[in-house]
Image (cartoon, rainbow, N blue to C red; front, side):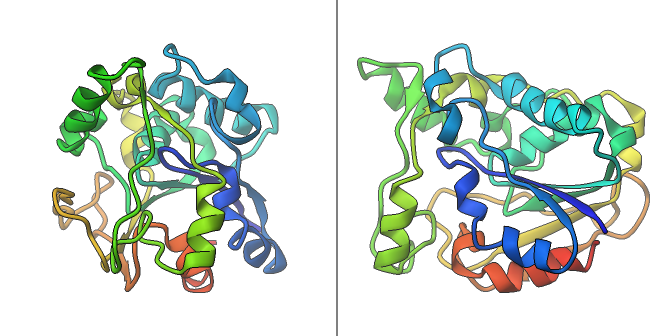
Length: 241
């Protein structure tokens, strides 16, 4: 049995994994898919003080309080920063890092450094009456849809779980100064259909920080693959368990 911790990206909450969790558990694995502070069952905690450090702390607390070890830590989108920061604090508990169509930071980088288009979102928020929060990205015509979700029923379901993202999450830098973090194996899963204009993906170095060859997989779907291709995503994740 492996332990998977699935971390949602910006604007989402833990419910976005509802199609993946039962597939992993039915294969005999332990799964946690929490909502980060400010989302889902923690929506009442949303505020300008919520940042990347808050969310990394959420994951560290979940893992340590439940005494989880050998964790396969999966971060979607913005949560690539979250899992990196969390792993830096408790590398001895992490068996594998999975960057799911995610931001992949270096030490000291923020989301703005990794994905520069996020600065435009921050600037737009600064001109509004609530400069500390950024509303979800708008739904676009197919093949882009709502975070890559184009099925009307699925998009309607996704809208029920979206909420604003605090600006501080995109501005706080990642700490990756624990040498033990570099020894953790990594896998990158890229969603390669319907990539919006302005979204850039850094090339993955041929060698992982631990010296192993890079492991990069692709799914022929949009950004929210846990909604559009849950079975295919689960098949990839099970290869790591």
